Length: 100
Image (cartoon, rainbow, N blue to C red; front, top):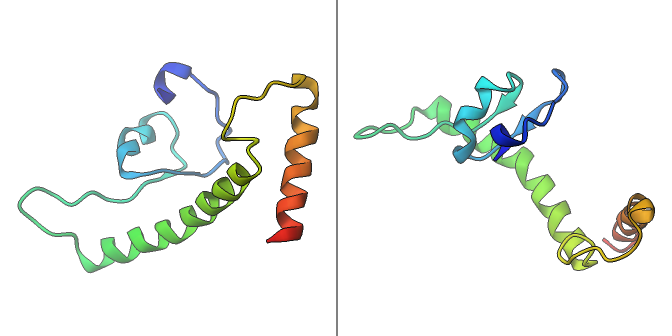
């Protein structure tokens, strides 16, 4: 889907992806994805440590997305004016920050 969208990403932007995004490095060099376990083999200790470090970074974003869904701005269809989406989204983030 990323390849088909042809979404331009800035070179300095660091992307964190799942194992399913292994091929994204062809399109965006500054991408971090966990290393997959090779067939009939195991990951090295270094690879396991790197995968855990990447998971620690990704989980922060996952928790933020979950908490934003509690405010339903991301989990349902947005039916208001698109001009005010950014304003309402930022307001939800502020509310989230106050309560959590």
